[in-house]
Image (cartoon, rainbow, N blue to C red; front, side, top):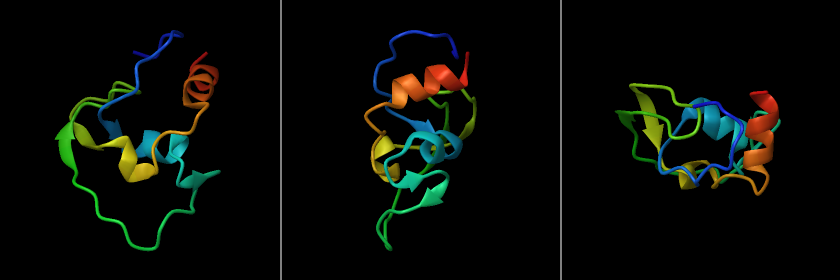
Length: 77
């Protein structure tokens, strides 16, 4: 799933993608609210394609940054 193309906004993302592309993270450091609840379940990451991993909605990482597609494609060239 790491091919270079236009991707639709993911419904479910894993923790690694949330930290890498989420708005509440800056260079891997959490900068979001002090208190936040999230619902996590075992599933597949719609961004990196990881299978049977804990996933949640992108909103639980502050939604994806505006340039998430460009950043993802650059990281997976």
